[in-house]
Length: 203
Image (cartoon, rainbow, N blue to C red; front, side, top):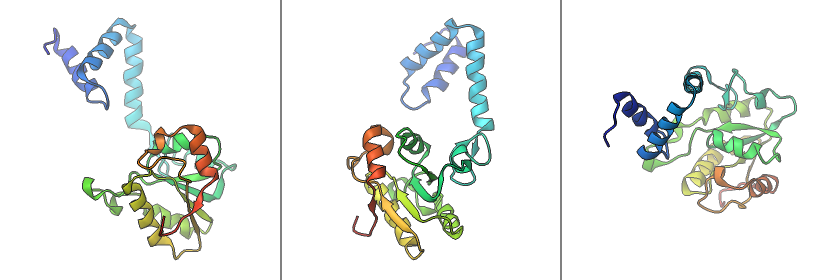
């Protein structure tokens, strides 16, 4: 597609590089921005620059945060004995939206997937051992996607740390097999947290 401006073409190239956005949609977004006051585009640009330059990873759970320790981990109202293990930040947001969970989290940063070249060393699994060594944790909840990779990840973690004096549980399968957690409706996800089941090697 030919564009009347190289500047416009560059903007379309960058926008279309985002997930789920094709070149036609990128062009529509770029033209929309050009119709807005300059301050709108400047505000958007500054927010994106701040996103990559200022956002932090929580030292406790690896969640995105404005501070070294996120608001969930620093909250005295959250249960230190209960840790929910999830794949990424989107899962934390989904669970928090249910309003049914009062513990804390640990974000793995993905799941074990040999096909994609992701092994245990690429995940935040050492953080699990640090939490175990703190002596505070009494239960880990696996809230991983109901896929082969999610089950493999849960099984690996369980085998690695089952000798510790801690309970492992898994959210109830109110989530369909093969589903990603972030797409589950809030009611099903909330019930899955409340009705979690003890985890064992046969799960």
